[in-house]
Amino acid sequence: MFRKNALFLTYLVLALILLIGSSAQKLTKANFLSGSLYFPFINSLNSLEDIFHVQAENAKLINSLAEKTLRVNMLENSLKYYRETQTELNIPDYEIIVSDVVGYSGNYNERNLIINSGRKIGINRNYPVISSAGIVGKVIETSHNYSVIMPYNHPAFKLGVMSKSTQVQGILESDVYGNSYMGMINLGSEISLGDTIVTSNISSFFPKNIPVGTVSRITDSNDKVHMDAYITPFTNPYGLDKLFVLFFSKDKDYENELKTKRK
Image (cartoon, rainbow, N blue to C red):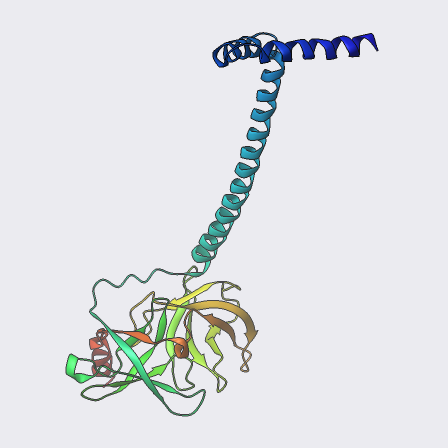
């Protein structure tokens, strides 16, 4: 009880001392007391304030780090998917014309695409058509100002393709429902789910190594001699508003030479 009263009387005396005198004298006394008697108390308050500030900054840094970590994980996953499934479109030796899709022709699942470029700018039949992700189809009809494109998922479309990693050859085909698959694969060939499929040299109207899609399912074909590898394509032909017509014609002189030898 005596200690409490003594502490109270001490604070009362200090308060009276601070109240006595002019403003300048009060300020001088306050500065003296804050630097001596009150210093431990004030220093403790400042330390607590610094601790609270550091804790708040630490919380912000933890949240920022969590966001950055999540972003890095997303980018790493995207990069991994790209490396596993995509093939770069590297076709510097051929002229490309960008064209708009302006319409469709034919029945559903057999629809051809119409673009606003034609013979006026040099487009010919059987020119390959691609998107930024891979193959789209081929030119089957041209006029002065437009062309008709048969997409790869048309039942009449066929294309020589291969596995990018193992070079296993096959023929890209599609059923009446638009499901695309790589047929004519010899039984026992080295091909697996997830393999990237690209165009091959067997193609008569596409250059080699243009991306097609990835293998999603492998089944035995009806002839029991070959396998069919169903493909998830990189491009949806009916979800595009622009196409790239590739000015490419394959050299087929070897065909004439073969015909000559057979005679």
